Image (cartoon, rainbow, N blue to C red):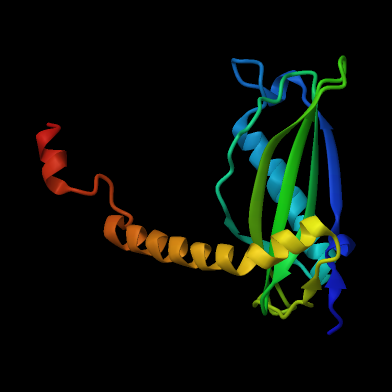
Length: 178
């Protein structure tokens, strides 16, 4: 399987922020931005793997600047690193005030996508290689981020075991509420 440059998966999406996309503050719903992030990450990953993909993990999403009604939002995504069947995708979102031309990075995120074969099981993906200074920076730090994800996933599994599917979790709490 031939490795590919990061830029081969580059995906860019622009959207106009309209009233149904905003909250009571007149800014883009965080969940709407996260949906945009997942969408461009999936396109970039599929472009790299040339196979269907699913989201395995989304790292923290920090909202750095508000995206206001009437602004545009431009998301750029590309695969920064691969393992056997998974791909780390970097996403940068930039908001632009169309009246003034002012642009701000409103968020950055990393999403891990897994490629699927015809049997819907994880499938091997090509390696990726960086070319630009920014791509090299992201690629070099990727193994560290992967370790942090692995640790976070272990903690999430422990939380799931601890809390299970019952609600409320504690029968005593339930009795105290009566």
